[in-house]
Image (cartoon, rainbow, N blue to C red; front, side, top):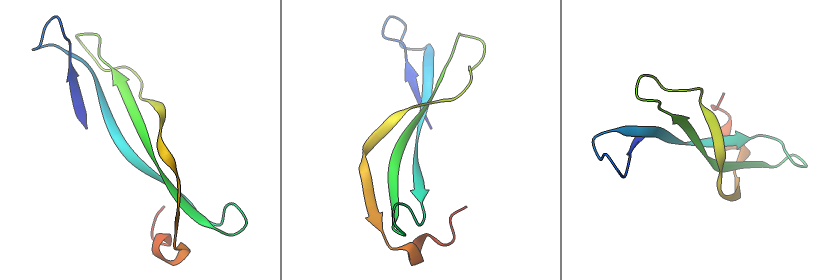
Length: 72
């Protein structure tokens, strides 16, 4: 997870982010794919807010369904 510092106060955190991988199995048409997603949380100076998906990075990438059987 990466914390982002505010520009006007470089020692203050404004939010944090994480990059995660989402895996689809047997979709579409029995295929398996993965995509990278960005998850963010804003920080108000005291606590982090709810995490939210900020978007996708790139596109769905085909992957062997055999290689993703262990993902839950």
